[in-house]
Amino acid sequence: MRTAEKIPKYRYLITLFFVFFLITLLGCFYLGKIRGPEAGLYFYSYQSISVIPMSVILMLLLAKTDRPISGPSHTRKIADLTFGIYFIHPVIIEISDYMGLKTISFNPIVSVPLITVSTFAVSLFFAWIISRIGYLRRIV
Image: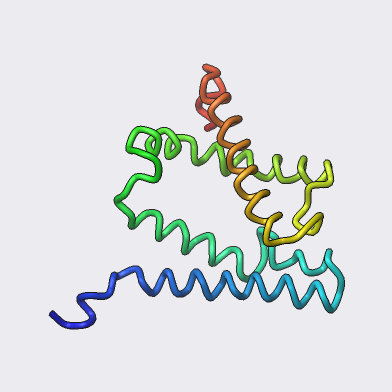
């Protein structure tokens, strides 16, 4: 068996994902040090030069996987709500910013994963609620 056949086809996507992840991480850190914490958040924003490709790569990686995230039935239910989660999550982020829960509020090693997981969970919950309302079901 040749070496190229042993390497998963998506290895390059994983490598690219981590390259853009490091660009985001280091960009936030250094721009924040040079121009202040608010400027450092550019690399964490939706329109940044590193977050957009990272999002596309993550979607491609998830499309290539055949393993359910949390059991086949849960994964299917979450998959059905993905557009709703995508649609709702900016509102949840804005509300958390307004309430003072920002990535710069405390140590980013804790704040970024905490905000990410909580935003996903709350968005999933509201997308599920909307999916239960007859007319609004079409939105999500």
